[in-house]
Amino acid sequence: MNKKSFKLTEAQILEWKQEVVNYLASLLPDSNSMGALAQVLMSTLKPHFKLKGYFLLQPDMLMTEAHYLRKGLIKLYSIDAQSGEEKIRFIWAAGSIVVLLEAFRERLVNEVLYIELMEDCELVSISNFCMDDIYEEHTVAYRLTEKIRAAEIMRKDSQTEILQMVDKKMRYCVCKQKFPEFLVNGVWRLSNKEICSFIGTKESTLLDARKICPD
Image (tube, rainbow, N blue to C red; front, side, top):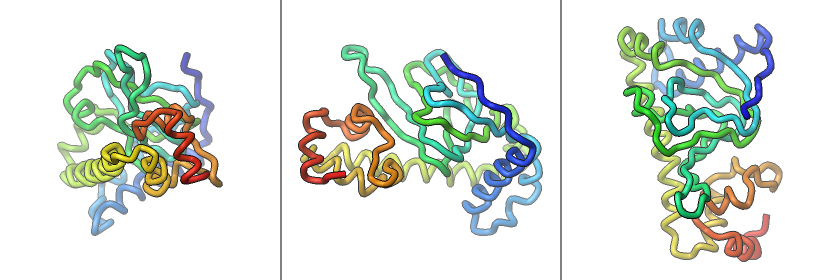
């Protein structure tokens, strides 16, 4: 069961909104291109805090919001119909936009995917209804969308490169190199099962890999 979030102070709300605007401005060659869009975002963005285990998306749901992840980790996964195991397709880290763009823009009903918080998370969200107006009135929003899409593709490509490695033991070593944000002071933020799902190995292989690349 999803738990309720705590109430943010006015100062926190303002700070978190401004952080999103600053992040989006950093994606553009000319930060002044944000212009009036920055003001609109400051009035429409909704900061909130959610606890580990909260679902942003489940089957038969619409993805009605996009989220800036200020702090935490969030996973996108499906569940294998035969084994019942999770298959992690993507992990968002702090400083990224959590959204399935096509589903968000086209109001598509999600069929098999889950988006679940792996840690307590700080989020700043906006609805697709608000974004409809923003796209209509601010052409720079399309440029920002493409920048966000490109960043997600680059991150996904890094995971794909790992999954394509023939030596499954080395997948663990490369994962540590490509995704250092998954560790804090040498301690993994992912469980063993989540690591194995992300890099496509078994836990027995993970144990052997840790002898080659110790934490």
